[in-house]
Image (cartoon, rainbow, N blue to C red; front, side):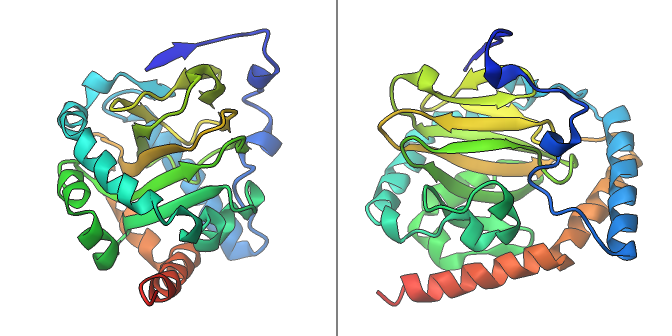
Length: 267
């Protein structure tokens, strides 16, 4: 993983106080209940930052999480299963077809997903087709979501942030086209590049942006896992993450995934 900062680049002209950019991926609440929940989540996020075991950097050193090296050792097994899935890439759902709230940042068919697990829901058929990946995922403590994320050539994902900093994000590079400097991600003010078989661990609650300016497809194993937090605040984080399964967004995503699987496996 290579990280660079180019202060001259327009890609880095991001102001941490620019709320329009910071919250682009979210649909602002309009009801009193929604606004109250949002205010509570923002309060909790401040607590989690203060009591985060590994600090609050935009990008983590991979050695912070020893399990990442174990996953990397078997990356080629995951890549072989991805290659089988890629044979039907055009039939895979676009991200916004599963998670409708990401329509604020993408509405085309250039960001495909292959869902494996998330917030209490496991795609048994998808996992059956990727048994090695499913086995390896069990090595990640506190895993909350897991899927293959596939970007088409020339795809750009605009600046946005994740909805909650109680999870951290893990990318395992599986298919990274050349030139690598044209296939990149900006996290806050740092630009980094994926490499096949290597991990990238970051906090997606920081503003970030993605480009695939190559002529090939970029694919990663995309995982959200529970942020390590000091006791007793880790219990508060666990409570919120457990409650997420009941949110309208997660319930809608589960239904969308089930409908897609029904169509996909009938063929």
